[in-house]
Image (cartoon, rainbow, N blue to C red):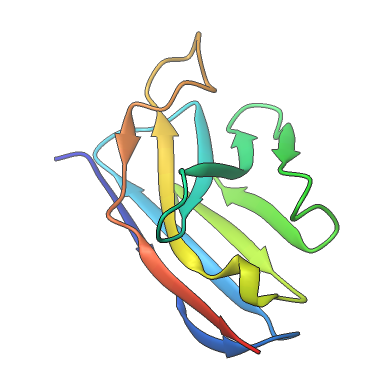
Length: 119
């Protein structure tokens, strides 16, 4: 069974840090990403990483604050979030691509983990 399971969300004060994890099982993936969705807003891409080569990209709003990384041996991807702001409050979802040809098109999704940043 293919699964993506997120963990690490929670409540943190502004300026604090959290580290999210996404454990993949059932197969390997060519690319991973973290998206977020706040109430009343569209889902947005936060950060992405390719399994081969490790190329990353970030939303402008999180550059220099968030870092995406992966551990291919553990089939796990992480999102280190520093200097958190109240506007980072959202459900964070892990996504992964099953195609080696389109690592940036995500075919599998986790259920999400809530991140709440208090001011």
